[in-house]
Amino acid sequence: MTFELRDYQREAVDGLYNYWASKAGDNPLIVAPTGSGKTAIIAQIVKDAMTFSGTRVMIVTHVKELLEQGANGLLKMYPEADFGVYSAGLKQKVLDRPITFAGIQSVWERAYDIVPAPDLILIDEAHMLPKNTETRYNRFIADLKVCNPAIKVVGLTATPYRLDTGYLHKGKGAIFDGIAYDIPIDMLMEQGYLSPVISKGGLNQIDLTNVKKRGGEFIESDLATAASDPELVRKTVEEIVELSEDRKSWLVFSSGVNHAYMLKDEFEAHDIDVGVVTGSDSSAVREQTIADFKSGELKCLINVNVLTTGFDHPAVDVVALVRATASAGLYVQMVGRGTRVAEGKTDALVLDFGSNVQRLGFIDRVKPKDKSAGVGEGKAPVKQCEACQTMCFAAVLQCHVCGHEFPPPTLNHNSSSYDGAMLSGQVKAEWVDVDSVLYHRHRKEGKPDSIKVTYYAGLRSVNEWLCPDHGGYAASRYQARRSLLASGANTTDEAMDECHFWNWPSRIKIKPSTYNPKYFEVVQFDYTKVERKYETQEGPIADWGVEDIPF
Image 1 (cartoon, rainbow, N blue to C red):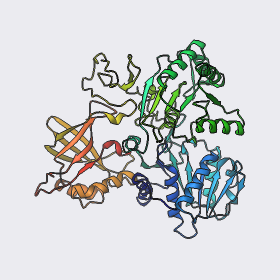
Image 2 (image 1 turned 60 degrees about the horizontal axis):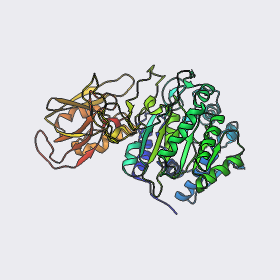
Image 3 (image 1 turned 90 degrees about the vertical axis):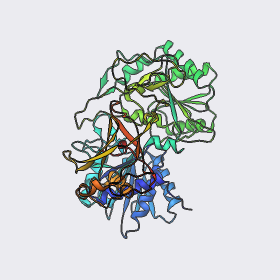
Image 4 (image 1 turned 90 degrees about the horizontal axis):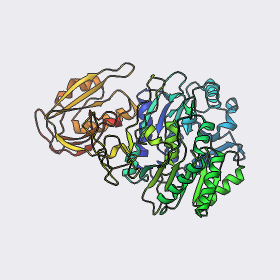
């Protein structure tokens, strides 16, 4: 049995091929949020690769469950696939097939035993790769490149960054050289592929005053001490029980093992069936506890750093962060446990007792510290309603849930109202008529030139950038736009020669920028009545946004 890719999955695969075709690099990332279907994307890439005679592909990850999911997904799409599995955890060690699913713990010292050497490596959960050349992943890839210098490496991840080294594709020692495609999480929620999430900050927050950091992250022992005050634990559980009463499946992230069992005792005092999983559990015990949670025998599951990746239970409709993290990746992964779609589930409630949303921002606009560029951490554009604890966009003047009015800001009076608690894209937008359009060549060091387009609408001006020469996703978005522009240009040079004859949209839909509300960004174009220098033609409305272009 075969199945069709969703549109965005097809675009992700095409984005990879466009990246290679444009010679932007050999080793890109595909950013795919939790629940977007990485398994299907991987399976399609593998199937396509097998159309070339003699090609060998390896899919590598660190979690045996992901190897099983990948192999099963491949069989659904590609029943005749000739693959083997090399994983001690799965008790299989096969290396002589064209397609190999391998656990990095088992295969990292076997690069020279894989003959012929692979042509393509796909790494699932690529955010696990540090830039340290002595790690298993890096040594394995280095050895494979000795065997096959032309090998390509593709990473798939929901979070293309690490706390310790910043973005995976930037800086010294980076394995990856760019982003081929980035699937927008807000688009997946709008189209029903992911469950919407809403957030409330706990009334009883963990006091982080005396919690120090090491390597950029909160020290576990300090955090556990701060979180384990008995009165705080009692009030935290009371709040979770009260706010989650009508929900079915609660996943709790705790601050340590002792803290987890303190929470468990309090939940049981409220007659809640609860289990705990930790890294010290045996595989059999952990798997049984998780199975009991998935079957509904346990309503609540508390975990200590073990269910952040590779855990798939769509029914989870409460994610309680009874811990703090400075890691944008960990934060997104934890929230992602609640974003899968399930029958009867309308949304997921995120209860944040560690000020994580305020620290790190909305999950579709997390901006980690980019250490490769020396960029510091900015303040997340989020604030908590003191009346109902809902997390709101910082610029909003009234809570969208309870109507509480926030004090007017002393600076920046261009605030706009948001309708959601954890997605920036829910800011209200407005249509404005376009009076004129100007085009300029935009130069940025280390990047190909692009076309800066400025739309003038009354007293407002709004910019976007078109990137024919950037390759990958950015170039594919320009190509998709060409028919609306009436453009025959394939390069920036060609575009600058003809852009003054391009079609203008009659109006554009704009909203305050997520990153700086003083500026606007375009979210939609109306080409229904196209403005053109020499003639007028009819055209459709096109969705587009500057936030879609990966710079």
